[in-house]
View 1: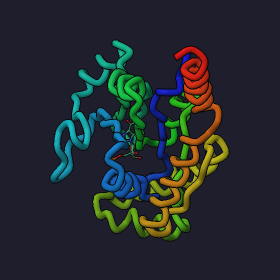
View 2: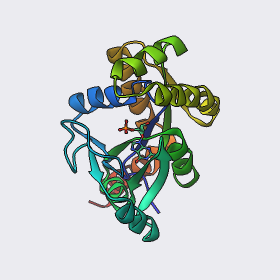
View 3: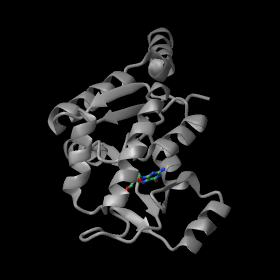
Amino acid sequence: MNTNNRGVLIVISGPSGAGKGTICKALLEKHKDLYLSVSATTRSPRNGEVEGVNYYFLTREHFQAQINENGFLEHAEVYGNCYGTPKANVEQMLEDGKDVILEIDIQGALKVKENFNEGVFIFVLPPSMEELKQRIIKRGSETKESLMTRFKSAYQEINYISKYNYAVVNDTVEVAASKVEAIIAAEKCRVDRIKDTILDSKEGFIHEQLYD
Ligand code: 5GP
């Protein structure tokens, strides 16, 4: 099967507070040919969040029904809420040759890797643990207890970095986003992704020269 016209799956992951969402936003604003997969979640919408844009907000029952129907590429429980990547959307976009970003937690990224080893797995790191703590505090949406949970998880999660292909330190959003852009550009030039397309067009060229 020639898989070269398929889009590239880009998984952006890392601890809560590392800034993966901000990096994705910057990338999507600049690159209209990148698509963000909209996840499903059981958590309640925050102020300003829109159904179908930020998330599909589901009840636990509906979420479970999606799991039963094998509707998720991956799903995980993150800080007491369920999150999942709708499978059909992502597969269709990749099939259509679109490059798709998943902005998901580390458990989810590791599950995706089991089935999509050809994906590009990028780990976003905070500049320091102190900075991570400050960013989580600044969000203001956390209680002291949930702040500690997130902070402890971040310590554990950084151990999984060796499962990823790339690590990007999110010092400033502009620099981090431009590093992710460079990674995507390089990945799209990889011989194993494009060789069949090049060899096919070469065959077409020779055929035209000889027989047309
Ligand atoms: P938040 O509730 O702050 O929007 O997201 C909490 C965490 O869930 C973040 O780390 C975010 O990346 C992660 N997340 C969002 N969507 C998904 C998803 O579809 N699957 C998984 N595994 N994690 C997700």
